[in-house]
Image (cartoon, rainbow, N blue to C red; front, side, top):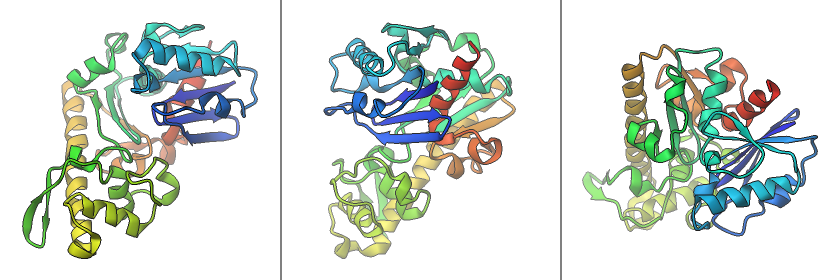
Length: 305
């Protein structure tokens, strides 16, 4: 059996060979079925969050699309829902259940812990105690509760995280255009490598230090030659400062409210954020694949059926 996590931007698969991540934007013509057809297994267990992609009319259409695509290769696939149960067919409970699979798996060993799973797009910040209160929780409710913070390591628009940076000693507002993203920020600052920058770049150009700096410079309506590398790096540092505070404050708030004793950190931001929240890097310390936590977790849950 293999574990599958179908996100809006990335397809993540956990199998006996390890973890496989494919960039697969569901808001465009999606090769989801074709990508899955390349995997051989007796069956698959699936979680999803990609049903929210705006290529679909609503979540029901997105769920149906994902279920159909999976069943073309794995007709007997099992789909984990926000009700904490597995299903064989499309149903509303399948929407955005990937985080719950991770929590359900991790809480077995850390019942009084909490999770920070920060990936390309979002940060899931969820306590394990009172698991029954998490059942049926939608992403809208999690946003209201502070258990979902919509910021990530790759795809977040720079202007959605910070509003300005000091350039040549002057506080300079950002334009609200999608000129640069958090992937540019983290690549320039060394928090991710080229192999981890798996999302499409805002301008469709390459991933390199110069290309990232040029995209960051456009955030203040400038060419790189106008503000220099120091100016572009200042933009990256300003954005990182804001994002770091946003996520760390959210973790501290949930930890205080729930009395969680351990923070387990997953996602491609695990190695960056684990020290900041005094948490456990799932991959480094527990050998759990942090960058595909939900795919791995749903696989483990299905193995216990």
